[in-house]
Image (cartoon, rainbow, N blue to C red; front, side):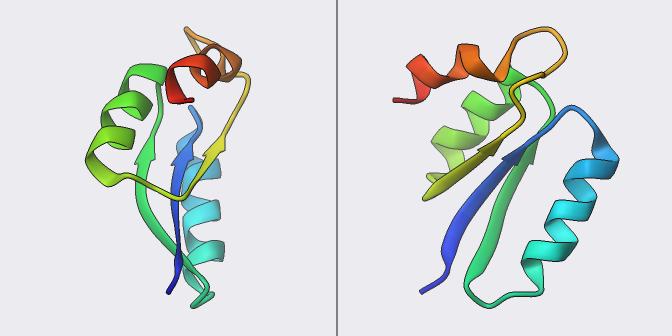
Length: 71
């Protein structure tokens, strides 16, 4: 069973690179992407990932601000 990942980064190029890299490995399944804190919370509910790969320097709201609501 693959580890389900949600990737959150405000840079599309970084997200795309991570998706391509991680999708090459059967151990990982990228179930969603988000570019903002709000999108991340929506995607978390919709995808229920095992792991959240989170940029702590998001535009608008810090990735650190997401830690409490995610827990």
